[in-house]
Amino acid sequence: MGSGYSRGQLTDLGRWNAQVSLNHLTIHDAADGLAKAAFSSQELSEAVHRQIARVEETVHAFHTVLTEPAKAPSTLSNPDSLLQGIPLGIKDNICTEDVVTTCGSRMLEHFIPPYNATVMTRLEGHGAVLVGKTNMDEFAMGSSTEHSAFQPTRNPWGLDRIPGGSSGGSAAAVAAHECIAALGSDTGGSIRQPAACCGVVGMKPTYGRVSRYGLVAYASSLDQIGPLTKDVTDAAIMFEAIAGHDVKDSTSVTMPIPTIAKALHRNMTEIRIGIPDEYFADGLDPEVNDGVRAAIHVLTACGAKTKAVSLPTTPYGIATYYLIATAEASSNLARYDGVKYGYRSSQREDLLEMYCQTRKEGFGAEAKRRIMLGTYALSAGYYDAYYGKAQQAREMIRADFETAFQEVDVIITPTTPTPAFRLGEKTDDPVQMYLSDIYTISANLGGFPAMSVPCAMSHGGLPIGMQILGRWFDELTMLQVAFAFEQETDWHLKRAPISEDSNG
Amino acid sequence: MEISKDEVQHVASLARLGIDESEIELFSAQLSHILTYFDTLKDMDTQAQSALSSGSLHHPLREDQVVPSLSRERALMNAPEADGGHFQVPKIMD
Image (cartoon, rainbow over all chains, first blue to last red; front, side):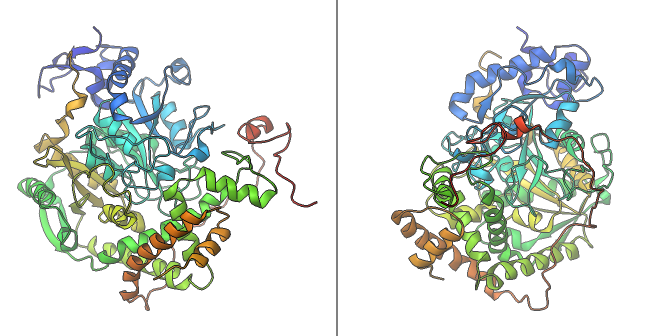
């Protein structure tokens, strides 16, 4: 059977020597195995598809699974890349040429992009293989993937739990080992929060690092694409592959991408970690608090110094974020009018009626709620009190972090206030749902990089995530701190029960 | 902050969003609840702060040159209604 091989044959990794299924591998281990011809990329893909056949009916991580590659791999061959032949899940708001891209919405249920997002072009250039498109909250609006127009995704660690959102499908697919790694998008925490809920690594690069050309826009001053992976090295590999300037996205920066994946070792005695009291206050689950504090202790035992930092604007984050995000969304989603692509209502007496009916029938409840909120915040008479005020607040939040980063190299906080909550628990209360993003939104408002790494487990067997925030364009230091933590611990090696292959 | 049903109706028409009576009721209650939460922002002293937008380090400009783009056929492939060369929409005037 091609799916099992002894990890000991590959390298002297030596952590364990047990038989593992190929779909359980990281990118770097799989690349190693492929390079040594321990197995073929065909066998790797087959192992991933067998896992999908076994667990997908329960997990629902994907909206679309490709049975064969969209493009012949021979035309994409890039033997120098670690991503050559690696099966990836891609969030369903990232355009994939000739592969349906729904954005979790009825509005785009049958939308077939005539072009690739820049990140897809880059990954295909590396020879990566598209496994499927992952489920998500409609238009990336949500923190639980329950706002998908099609079906909710379940958390592989607890099937009655949400996987987080909006990139819940990508996080669940990686945690259930239905792909080797995935891409998500993060507007207010939509990569990091599901990564924390599903016990995987999730990274939002600095705003401007990764082209958004071909990403279905939600809130353009906040959106960023990033990886969800099984470990920190894989996040660095994915980041290096997708980052860089793109003439098709005028917000992408021309700054060179440093070599990261091969530079992850760093002496922690040089690192100063900022700990903001405001992120360890009321509302934080005690188990999350203990888990993150214990994780910080692991880093200080490696020689890192900690320093208390103050972020006094923290209580205003959620309101600021939801005003700006919904205002931008109401503008971005104006394009769904039933004319050029997407759903069109059959009720069409005249043009105006066609617009209104198309949008009534095509959008789900949360998308409508955010369009309404954003339109209200931008409307005459309320603009200064809401949108204008939020823009000022955003600058003050950003300035808080700028001050803190003068004294520390990274800031560490919990990623989420609690472990994954139950399906249905917050769907009727939008404000409670919005509060799930309380620790993640500031990185989007400020534009700096942030990531979540698994750092503990709750007594109920649910993963807990630690968030590491870095200075603008200093993904390297952030990833080095995450890597140092990972070297000392084995949280990233823990597997969700459902992901275990019964036949080894 | 209370949002009346009339205001909900007005905002929906600005957004070109058709809504029915039950949604008006629901949005009136939910938007009021959310905006009440957002009132926390009123406590924040932002007087000294300008609302500069974050981010961009420069204004990227390029030459306005014609480059290859989607074919007409590919551009129309997702159109709900097209006649082979154009997007078709319901009549705008009689």
